[in-house]
Length: 265
Image (cartoon, rainbow, N blue to C red; front, side, top):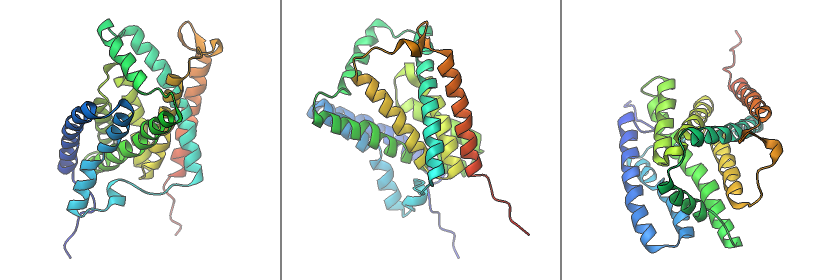
């Protein structure tokens, strides 16, 4: 019997990644010139998965195995939520540290404000399309591409650590904004570990979706950050410590769930 591949090779995955990036840039230019900012957000998240879907279909690979569309249990969902809560707080503090060391230059502050404004909702329609795009579609489609197709292909041809780190780097790079690279890179490493250990993108989707949900919520409320959460312009060490503790607990629980079972003899 001739062996038939069920998911892309490393070379194919990297080709898909490069083509997806080029396709995304060209499509964005067209979308921005035709549609409103709300529709633009929706279409931007939708088009990122199109090249890989087409490639997998044409090559006859398994969609389930190529994108790691494997179901998970309730304990995994719980471990993913605990990990997400921890990473949200840690990412917040990392963001504050990065912007303290490398302040956003004045010429870029306007662009940052414009980006934030494009994710603000002023109606039920805005809320629906932005939430579905920035939370649901972004989490699912980006994880299908990165922790699914790209990382799985790299894992098959190199060691796990390099596969996870390289995928996280690509993930951070495609988000473009320089002042969030470190946060996204670290987030991507944890997402990569979870996808590898479970052989499923759904834990990463849960974490990714919750992180985006909180970010979107903060971007849309005018209430100042509570004083009890902050300390000298940073996240209080108490909350950072709690977040680190939760992160360790979440990862330990996750690791325990997917610990290889001993075979009785």
